[in-house]
Length: 467
Ligand SMILES: Cc1ncc(COP(=O)(O)O)c(C=O)c1O
Image (cartoon, rainbow, N blue to C red):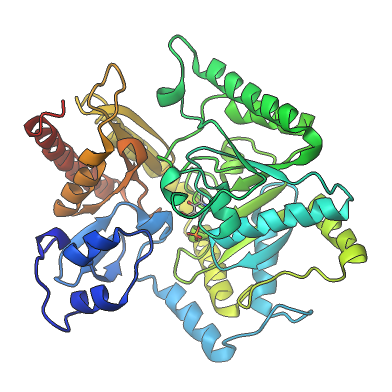
């Protein structure tokens, strides 16, 4: 039963108790009271099952995170064994555990060139929040007390803790929360199809955006700008790969003004773009990298910041001024998620998950491209095993639907009814981000079900007189 079909909930049913007690993240509170939850209780491979036993393909890998799918016994066992042996040790004041040590070593040895140390968090938000603290502390250590502003992009998603949500540039995540805080700035979204000017080539668009960044840094004063943060492929803003030459030009601007580059690989890390890190896909030279999600295939929560030797040396020098490196979470380097992350990374290697991703990418990207001619689809975009179709009422003019018409959410609801979980994102984009283990046959099923949802949505917009 789809949640919207439920008008009444039996007293003491899971749905009734959910409404009574559970304030959900990112949920319309009134609509939830009306419609109740979709309760997902089990999963196997790329499939998940709701409390009525209905099967869905998880076409979004949860929230872009369940890279190895569901029910992977090795990950469950890694958690069980570790908890039984040692359920918790802290990382503060020189304490350690062998799983955190092994994971730090493994991460640094597989990371893009230049990474030197790993710091553990519980999530992507905490990783990005920590990035801000690292950058500020680093510049304080170096005596650059003014160099604190951080530049992100409109439509970026970097999480929801206070500093992370100040980096985030999607409007819906900021409304009502009094963010961004001071010292956080946003430049244009690198989305050529939507933001490019008439007659402007993709490369010219990239040049314009790099010039915009340069002009902002100059206007603010390079001595006040500490860092620039970017997702290699924008996720929650619409699953948007970068325009050609964009990062090459952006990185030249950052180098010119001695501005650090924080790369948020929370979605793209561990194979999503067809390389272990998107830094490889787009030739990014990061000073700092955030990871989470596929680090543990979301079996247990864990994130990390990786930093260059230069940053590490700055933090080390900071000790002379400020005493210890006084930041950390109770669960930084928790042995159980660390054990699961280690096992996840072992599985990627043993099963050649990257090789598998590369082998199915053509089926995935071609499958998406088949929607390009549909009258409702303005743009099809993607890289590796992530992509989106953007819906428009006016293909030639790239128009947008009135957000109140909720066209992308309608599509996502129809997709669910046809047995695939896809996600509605801003400007009526539909994101696809399946588990990395998906096969070609399963990709074909995702596309078949999405095609039905697209036809339903086309019929709906015609009936509503929206096209
Ligand atoms: C690119 C990116 N960074 C950071 C985050 C925040 O991660 P978390 O939800 O684990 O705090 C997300 C979450 O989707 C993300 O997509």
